[in-house]
Image (tube, rainbow, N blue to C red):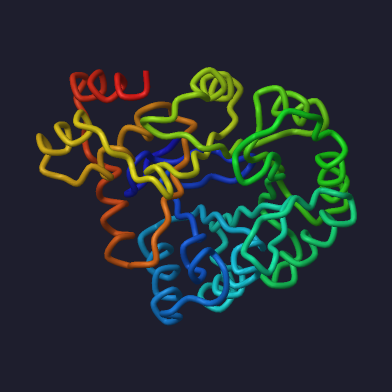
Length: 288
């Protein structure tokens, strides 16, 4: 790790150094992550503001929109800054009702990688996560065939680094036996601590852990302890939740999402909240 002006410093993601304070672009699509945003200029402004703030890790997916968010990224930031890492996901499509049907056949994955390349306007994708499970969470079962397809695309030079998302610990191990994994992206926050052991194992092996729904997602975090700690620091509970994640382990990469420049800046500042040992002990009790 080295220092940066953003909270948390940096992490080596494969061979790319990224800020641990990143940005998740899902909320830039329309309602239900479908269609264009109501405020297109505002969405472009958020992406530019993230980069101007020093963020070098942006998370996206071709399924957002679908293709809407990737097109916004290209319009706002292309040609991309050399230090910017754009992480995307494959393994799910969208249907007309806004669902997320599984799409992990070899032909699906190859198509999705090509679509990400085309819409983002790049020759190589920095990081591709295989999204496993379904909309309700991880599901047991082998991901070897699907991850093997991504490993082939990596050997073909279309993908630099590989990750997995929405997975069990067993699936992480299976993927790692197939090809190097630089990041795992699962649901995790103050109240959802099921991945504690996996997170610690990955930290020991130098693999990033990127929690999605770091603030609770569609059910925002609510806790008397969280509110008390936030009150002591004079910040919003979301700031404390992000700061706790950065303190939880050095391999945690934050990707909170927003469609507002003001909220983006608030998230970045909030993640830098200095928590005391007493604060951390009180917060740790929430998920245990």
